[in-house]
Length: 86
Image 1 (spheres, one colour):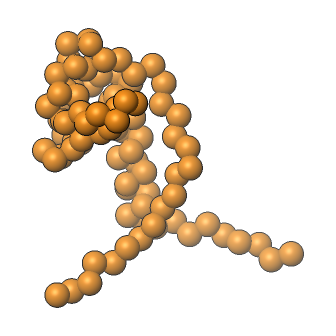
Image 2: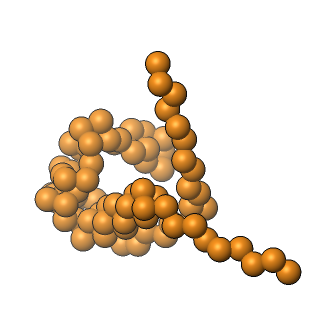
């Protein structure tokens, strides 16, 4: 049976490292780390379908109104997409 070898792409590895830092920062409410990771356009959808923008997330975490107890990544897929030159 042929053996396959995982190809390590440095860009994908860097993105995965950022994802791990983001998860760790959420779990510990590390505000400086989150401020450095999240873009000004960041948002997430809450479980009710609402939108939480960056400033609200940081405010909730900083005030202790929101706490992440666990983050379990699942169905992680990596895709490389090229942006065509105009």
